[in-house]
Length: 111
Length: 117
Image (cartoon, rainbow over all chains, first blue to last red; front, side, top):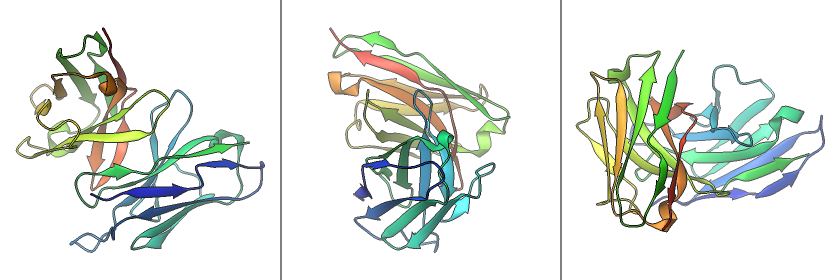
């Protein structure tokens, strides 16, 4: 099974400043089809998760361009160029390359 | 727009069964694979089960294999999760989510399952 490890687990941030979250997988996430199925999701308090980034670096519809994803193989990063108040909550990386699919533990972003 | 609405949660005693439903609208239901994901209170996300667009393929987390069954009725635009032999550690919010080319692009609001005597 693929284990996803996020760092940090908690990140105090300042509005207007950048933030970065790392995600490492225990095995390469490169699928046999050549794609890397690494996504980032954001969960605001009391809400379901919502998709931010898919296949490492593709922003989902409606996601502000202050969010960006990068990485390859087993190491991935989510960056927020300038944190806004609505960005608080928990961020999860997840892999859908291989069953069983798995999530990172979550990173809590707080102002 | 895409809408997923879960139902069927509630309080259930350990060892008993429960069936969750997820009613879908706003998209061609029979063209998409679907998943159940759960979240224990105050904890992270936990993938539970997958079903292919036509229901022919399922896959489960080890923690629920043999106890949970995922199914779908494409004529009713509804996804199901039959849960049996429920345990206290199954207590969670259960979300259904749509799989669009390998990423989970739409999520329901969730239904809460509490396993307690």
